[in-house]
Image (cartoon, rainbow, N blue to C red; front, side, top):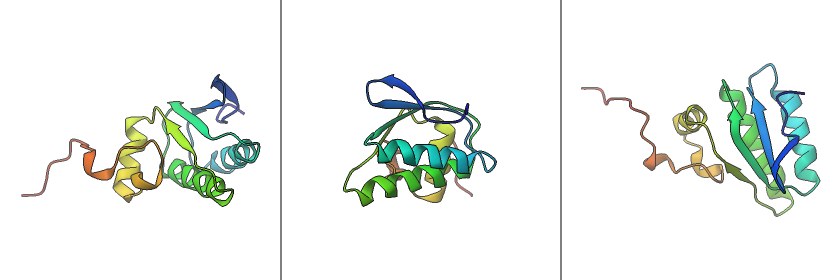
Length: 112
């Protein structure tokens, strides 16, 4: 599966590649859950591209899955587009490794 987190970047750091969209989210979600259930905690998002809001749902689900086992996840190298989507939904504080909402500047101008 090209969109799955199955390739290790470094020991215990999995690389999620390709897009996570509505069409691929379920497969990526399930594979990530299996990796988390296997004890892994770190995911690199550096190769994630063209993702939509489904990616946020997948990451939040993974975060909850790990929390149920009293473990935390950490996401590394989050693409700017994904950070912007998370900021729009106000959930960056729930995704370990993402900047806090008040530190994100998306380039949007306030309404006059």
